[in-house]
Length: 446
Ligand code: ADP
Figure 1 (tube, protein in one colour):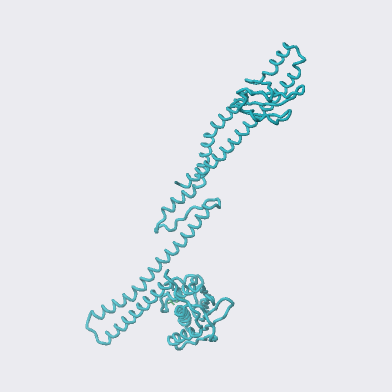
Figure 2 (cartoon, protein in one colour):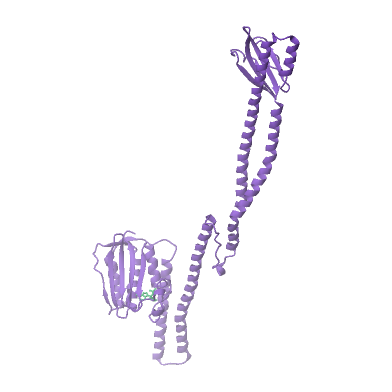
């Protein structure tokens, strides 16, 4: 069942419950009110009967009968009895009064109900003797009023419920309309129109929040999708280039008989391009590993000094002429990290600093902060254009001013992921022509 129908039904049932309760209370109190009102009138009739019998002895019998008929038979189907409380009771009264009169004081009353007939009995005293006066009558007026009320309530109930149901249905339909139109819109979103967004209703309600969450999700998906497309196009470009060179070189070498030196030259080119391809594939694999959804690699409390030593060894071999200032780190300084990933991240950063700084004047620093280690690598190289800084951590993105340098644009993407893995982050500050400072903040205790 749709939410709209469910809400309308729930609303109607709740209102029906409340209305039934209200109707019941109205009917119950009206009936009670009529009964007590009629009981007052019966009591007045008993008063009259009592007074009449007190006066009867002093009136002539004819006058007494006349007065009695004029004043006492006023209520509908009224009947009266003047009895001795100790004597036998008539059959019609016995079920209501038998056993109840004992101990009833003078003036004490008993009220009873015989179907529609209401009765009242009272003890009074005359000349030292106790008498029982009983008056019963039917409250026709009250019953008619109650029957009318019952009819009004019963007739109005289904109509009111119908109206409430209709109002509930219309109200929920109106409230959920933005959701329905957004559902239709969402069904139409495919990979080819990821730019479509859900409509945000003017009121800031749950539907508005939900639509804006879905829109945010679509923004992220669109970005990821765009990024994938760009990545695939960059990757295929990078793979195609060395393959074209290898195929071209082999074709030229095979097209005619050539001196051995030419073949050697071709093989050198092919080997170098194959090596480039090899490095590219390795980098792509490492990136895939760091970007995977699988298990995180183990972390340990690793000493920083040996990691820096390993980085230094690799870099000094690759850039023997570079002038790098390495930090002094105490041998017990530790970092909660995965050693291999951390070494790879730092090697990448120092390698970039040497590569993009023709003077190769690089400073590596490490500072202990209260909660984390701050590692900075500063160079005085070509720098990065401001508008490209946010893009260079995307796989295969290379800044426009660095295309003449060798590289594949995968290193920083990997470092960024490694930093995230360690709950740290990578910050890049750079001024074109002046140099770049890359800061890696890694929590000390994971
Ligand atoms: P690669 O260096 O192989 O191209 P990276 O992912 O390491 O790939 O770097 C991405 C891009 O960021 C580089 O192509 C370059 O444009 C820019 N970059 C990174 N480090 C520096 C740096 N220290 N100085 C200038 N540009 C840099």
